[in-house]
Image (cartoon, rainbow, N blue to C red; front, top):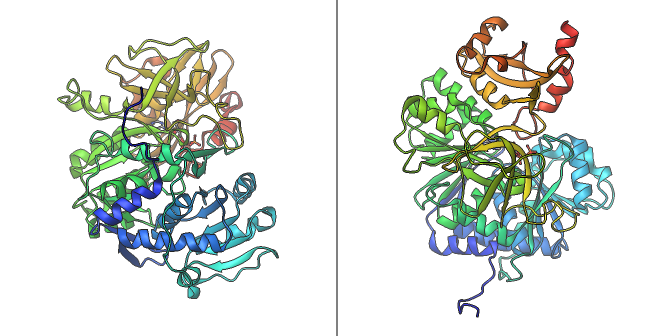
Length: 545
Ligand code: ADP
């Protein structure tokens, strides 16, 4: 017997309709490319999204067509999120920090019909235009006066967003259709290989949005003012563009300005209460605050994820600025939220070192995500906080296949998706990533955690950034090598840097060498590009010998 409750499809458009009717006073504040501020409210966003659907129809966009975006976090990008998915097409967000060859590959692979681009990305459009025959038009997200002059191949129209909008009305009613319909497409940033497309559905997006608003996840309320530093071109800005309107929280969109001074000013001017982003951004903010003596006047919490959160950030924001740091883990394939480190009765009273040690872990699975760790033969390992294994996840917002592949092909018969991360899980269910399977250092057959070694290295007062890479060793196969960048104005003595490990790790984990660089290579999402470092330093010890 079925229950007798209404079976209404979960539609992304229902989020913006809800916000427009119930949260009329909440704002969307955007920092424009030119540094100016644009502000409007949810009813304006919803009305402009409907108008934009009419523009898309005028461009002959049909259900399931891919509409690409090359955009910063701002109101027009938000309008595209809702209009494209709401009309049953697929919003394909592209990471503009990738190189032109990768972007060309991604546009061709997705066979995008139209690209909406920020004027700052005109050069990218010029570089890829001849490789992307599926693209009929490029729409620059600006006024007529700001339009860049570009020579596009014939058959590719050059259009102006505000001009197209001005020619339409908002006379459109959001349709209802199967909630499993594809809504958005995002390629993984390729830390470990060629970009692969993750295709989110209306159902997965709405359920993920509802899950992340919970108190022990993002804890969003209508009175919050949320600043997504995490870009809308990377895993839908961790779902915040959906979760915020679902709760009525205001959105403060930083545009391209993500440096410490810009973020501090925007956070204080716009009374931001919550923000989310990767460690690199928060390290930049922390350095600026310490150097300038400025304070964060209204922020009460930062969500940090995407890479392991260094202890320095966990400690400094709380003790120096009274800002709580919430450590999260996830990936493009998990929409992205998988785990969050929120307190439970047994950890809520931890203090000092024990508290910091606990917060370094990535946290417990949020409701909706199943987790397990397995050995190389696939056998499940104990949740004892010691056994390390390959982390597997499943859930309604976890990918079942990549773009263009057979449904189910990215997971096993029971739906488990292999994350590529290596982790332990303690008896309380708290997961800790010790490595990515490709970054693992196996010395004499035993695993050394590169994340642990990196976290300790960045606690050195003169180290700005650190990475541990495996380097070949004749006896132990692999040994860890520490690659560091000094803080501005500091000089690093390799032997002295290693003393930071005294008493903190097993002796045999101590890196076999230290290399000081001016900067580390980063991926398009701000993570250290380990592959480049591994290739460069693979033979380091042998060359030195
Ligand atoms: P890519 O795989 O291309 O880097 P993602 O942005 O999806 O793209 O990255 C997901 C990966 O980032 C995870 O598999 C994990 O290795 C890493 N990651 C994410 N959050 C954390 C975290 N809190 N701690 C450690 N690693 C993390």
